[in-house]
Length: 118
Image 1: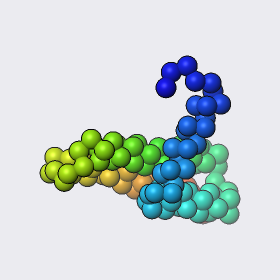
Image 2: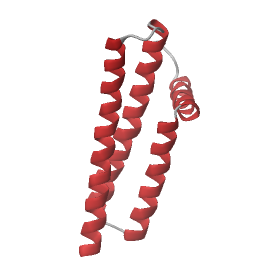
Image 3: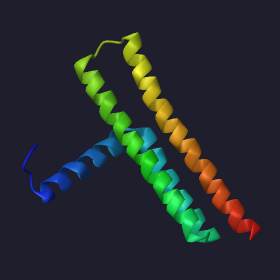
């Protein structure tokens, strides 16, 4: 909605994140994975550039999961029946999240390997 206060906008955003956390098991898995990765980073203490890259990856994966959930909810609302083309859209969105997740894993492994090597 237009002309909302920053406080109301933040409340809406937090409500969206909370909804996704409550309803999407993959989102909860990504959040747990992010916590585990951060703990591993604390243990291995990589250079700050690795921290920055991994935090960016975590943000992208979480954001992609939020986009995926938003689109799935919108699609299901507008077209509740099963349809092959809608299935393709949902699969593509899931593929986006998978690609970002795999990229994040690879970057985290590089960070750990670089730290162990040093």
